[in-house]
Length: 105
View 1 (cartoon, rainbow, N blue to C red):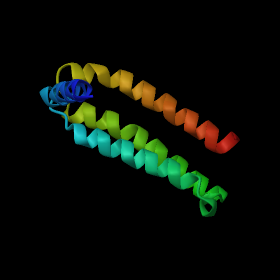
View 2: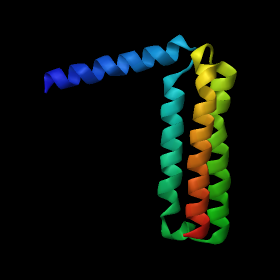
View 3: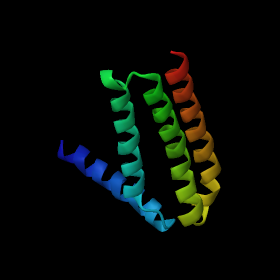
View 4: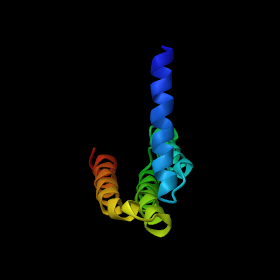
């Protein structure tokens, strides 16, 4: 168990080092993930089932989908900017899936 914890800590330091080497704050992405998860959890509460609430969640999710890539584009350097296109595409596809899910299902 200790060895597994050491491996997780080593990988965590390596990932944090990568983001800091490209002038990015990893806590920003953790916070972005927490906000997105909170929005998903709020959607399933009964008093947010009105169509106006669904539209508000869609707008918030679309905005969130652009925050991460914009942060990378503005603050990142080196390979971080090159990976920005990949992140932008994946987050846009993820947001499109959420839009389809919230509107059509």
